[in-house]
Length: 391
Ligand code: TGC
Ligand code: FAD
Image (tube, rainbow, N blue to C red; front, side, top):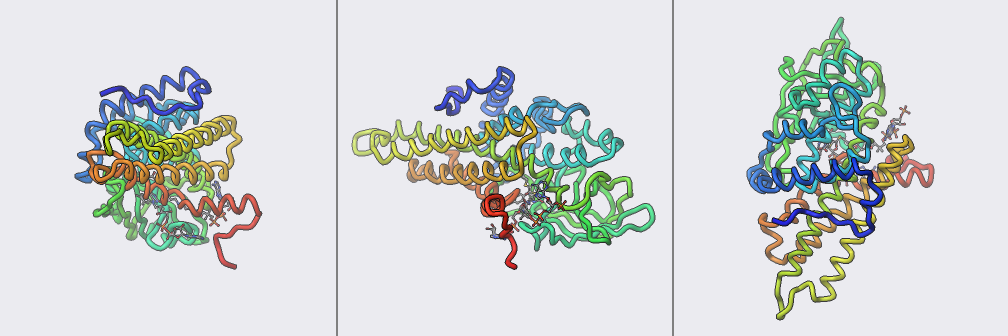
């Protein structure tokens, strides 16, 4: 198989440092050798390739931007490139790494006590402790502020009651970061260890999307958490949203990986598929589709790279991240459908990647803020009016 070369129409490589290119190429090689050969089977069987976790750790992907605690301490741009390559393999893998690093380790790193950081982060960086992040509930998705999960303080414990839904890695997690309201109605973060009495999980089956990812419900019934498991350094929705800023950033990059995977597939197929005595790539309508794809990849790369540079300079705001997450995932989804079209009937089989990426991106377009929620975040930035609620 020829090595995957991505798509670099605007010579974006010239804007990357040697280190950044080296990191990108290392992960690209890993995906080609160890993920592409197995991912179709995992997608078909609905299983997460757990055997890859030590490799993610060895390659420094888990908590990649965290400094200390055995983490790689990479720049956000390097982290973005890792997410791009991972999602070229499958969104499920990027999802696992996002949740482990940006959401679970990120919450402990940003809001935890020193004791909590020492206890969890090194093991999480090594992939020996798996994390999940419970914000969404059955009745509160886009509006997490309405959550009904409660944490009542009794002596030296908090008693958790409630349910979280659609939680990536929930069923395999050793530790859950759970957001709940205390008696004074303030949202706080809690570290809940697997095996704590009153904490159970149920995996979600029948998904057509992210089939190689574990998605679960978390149930808390009079689950007693020691006070020392409260994340002490944040209160309110800005806690979970602070973690989401980093995870959404990773998704904006990851979507480019899916785009590059299907563009490559569309291009190769169009050159080899003969109809009316010529490769279909000879026809103007097919070329127009390929030209649109390359244009959207290039635009997505420019958005992601400038966002990465802003983030590395500490200048990226949440609304900057929203634009890149919204645009890149939405365009990636369109591109998977366009590839499916170019592949004709072959495009509906899992022998080709476009269907798998398309199914995955349906979730990616919804989680971490739906496409329209990010559009509304931009609307609020432009007008100063928050349109999430009808007043
Ligand atoms: P709002 O009143 O606007 O804000 C409440 C407080 O939060 C602060 N804040 C932020 N802080 C940091 N970063 C951000 N991005 C922030 N956005 C808001 C804000 O300043 C305020 O702070 P304070 O101090 O005044 O209290 O909140 P709202 O309830 O009106 O919500 C607005 C809205 C709709 C934008 C928000 O709720 C939203 O983003 N909804 C989407 C929900 C979401 O993204 N859920 C994600 C769940 S996790 C997940 O999907 C993981 S998938 C993982 C995978 O597999 O990859
Ligand atoms: P809803 O909020 O019910 O939205 C439904 C529709 O209504 C959408 O089109 C939305 O854009 C629209 N809508 C909602 N409000 C408005 C409004 N004010 N104005 C205009 N339109 C609006 N959550 C976690 O906490 N942790 C995880 O690890 C996690 N992993 C996930 C993994 C998968 C595979 C999936 C699919 C989801 C995951 N989620 C996770 C949940 C995800 O974050 C939510 O699905 C998402 O926030 C949307 O919530 P919802 O599904 O309840 O949709």
